[in-house]
Length: 165
Image 1 (tube, rainbow, N blue to C red):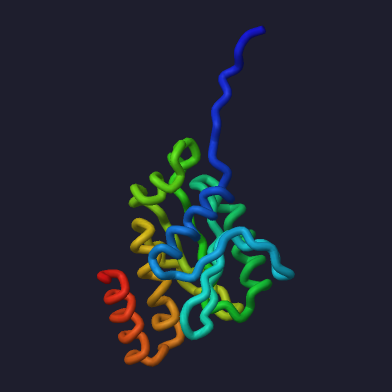
Image 2 (image 1 turned 90 degrees about the vertical axis):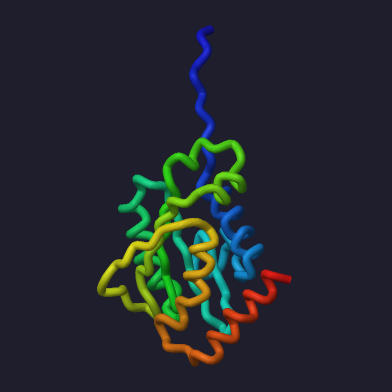
């Protein structure tokens, strides 16, 4: 019997779980692939002040499916301060060590799809690594809802002190 060429690939769900863990390590309260009556978002983030952000994540090449899921999440989570799309680079599909791949990746892309049940009028795609994403998540409520700047600055300073300790 001839041997078939079997290629192993990482399921998106596995990458989502590791991403949530890495966000936790960076001081972001994140959880992945948790079922609720609103559905099963890829990653949910709860920030200080009660701000919720939902990330829907897909590999490169699945943008149309991602758009559909973002619309569903916006309707399911109308109080979320942010519904975000995130694209994992396609090379991550075949990486053997997902955490290592997440740490070394510098080519993630993400954007804010909507806020508080309303689709954003412009799409500003951002990119970078896990640290850049964590930083963006921290300042998103300030950017969207003009949270008191003293409180926001105190949160940033607190995070910096905690990280350096």
